[in-house]
Length: 606
Image (cartoon, rainbow, N blue to C red; front, side, top):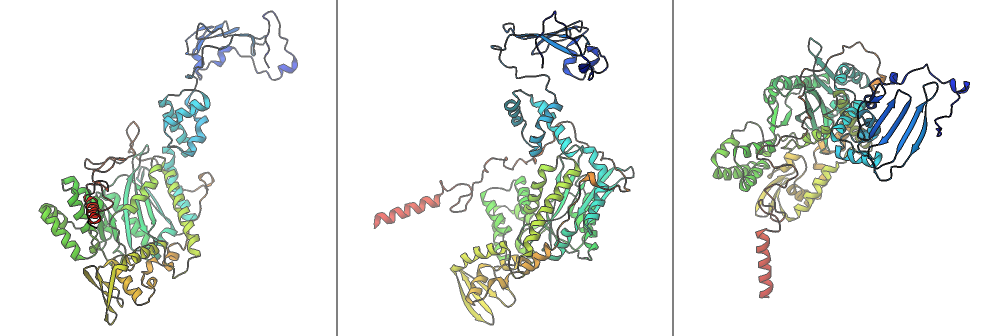
């Protein structure tokens, strides 16, 4: 504890005090330039001024500091002791009564601030810098500039997730660890002759087994750009399980979206299937019109069927100029048509609207209307929303090092499959999934307005309003074709099933039952140790790819086209919740006003 000493007093150093003394150093020996205060003085004189005041050193024997404001009387005076190592405060007078508090402290460095905010940034690395600025003011009573907080976030990201260049040399070892901890998994990392990273492909044994044994034969593919220091694209293969939820099959990282990259990805996917004795090549793929997908797909899977995302097809039409409420309604009627009659009727209206639009849609080679889909797939998905949902999950991690990104994806898949693995244990083989139950409940509410007439021989005629549909339970053929398209009885089939006192669960496709669910989640992904505990493996240490991002913060949001609505803004084509028409809402609905006038007129007449 420091005491106030008189300038004439002497300080006697005892042996006990001298034990902890280090070798003698002068004051200048400590001025190595590592601290901001080191530049304030030189040879015992004022070297520079700082915002909080001035400091005077006289021949390295006395230390005097005053407040910046002239009206403030605060002053401290210290002098060096006999051994010229310790300092003693001689006088401390005055108080900071009227000068206020200085909130801008130039001694605050990015390293010190990173240590103070590391726990907060570890909980949420995407916290805005404005929030960090307010946190520093409330917690430490200091005002920090935004550019310093950006640097702090960068330092924290490197401490938490490692450096971008450091993650690539560990990828070959990471692939070997996947194959050793999860036997039967497919993990491949490729590099150039100069040991530069080129691409990688990863699929765990539990994922490929579950897809081949229980999932429907439809595969969604998509790619998302990385936003870290090095350029790259993350390609994903996503399927749909029995509960209509996403099932991640494989993922990988390539340099760009090109024919070569997609060919590399599809070849590894086929090798993955061949590893489990599956030579099937007539899978159904759904994607948007990405560059190089079509050429690479039919090169590796010659008999594959390709669906196109209708949302992207509609966006292409709007980009050309074919838009409006009328075209929007006719396009989605044609797209959601389960039978050819409704499709042709909608297309004839589109032809009357614009012949060029009709010709464009007729010349689309991919499958885009539901009535075109293969009935054995039992899936009516005509958009890539289930793949985009997985991209949304990985969006927050695509700006971190590649090894941490792959680990986060593996951890997410492991937790998801683990919870469903435990759920499948208690599921009975003949139970149907929650999705199938929900569809049956919805269609059961609609079949009450249908009337059935038995024709004999297991054939029936169901009248829905003014339209009649033939139904045959023996071979499960139905006029509306919704049953064949999804694998769950439609309202016309349910009307016949309940009329015959049968159980509708017996007519649900096996893809929605507990047997298939148990096969899909019959295995789970096994955990892996931390990279610090990995054994030494004889694998090469590769270097990062050549492609680097330009200076500046990379964009994370997708660039929207000129015809697309801005994010967070209400779309120009409002949809009425009453008449389901576009261009107005329920408040300005003309049908509502006409109904209100008719009701009022009837009340007045009575």
